[in-house]
Image (tube, rainbow, N blue to C red):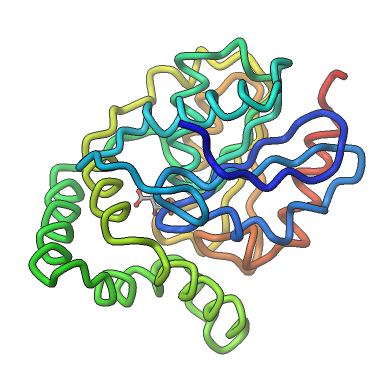
Length: 260
Ligand code: MLT
């Protein structure tokens, strides 16, 4: 399906895929950060300005195909740099495995290659049941997830970021949230593809990321040939929002290091 995208600047393309349950506005500080590049940030199906579909489960591969279909429709045919945060990283790894010829670089932010544990899977299914039992009310899911996304001192140090993330999560439609939760629970383990990645890769993680902690990011970076790991200070799971300065600088030096 054709997704809504923000499409800013001109030059080599950098595609940025948002995390769950967010939308392209999480990249507000990145859209204009790198003059000389064209930054394309889609809203995945059901989020932001992209309509939900009827499916009860959105697979990660479906979300990835939506991104590729949209880029095809936009005429983006040359290899691009693909960045994804958390769920966006799962989508990026799906593309890296199934359509590696589309990529010239990969940026994995606050993400992992492993599938859910059995317990993680059960928690997602329980959350879906709770949302459905509440007639589509996502407020307790949002209230429970928000503090895990940000560094523990975020509410005192960065109240505007907390407010912004809360607002984005609140506007995610229940239909998209439940279909995505089931897709996240069903996603495959992609650790086996990490050693086969041949494009330059940057792995970036917030030092206080409680969902995909730095130790896991280090293991992932070590498994990808030649990958660079950057740990972002004063940031949790949402490094691009919590510390855009350090995140943007790390991405800029990665972009400049790529062969043209
Ligand atoms: C995300 O930020 O996209 C989510 O934390 C991903 C997940 O729940 O696995």
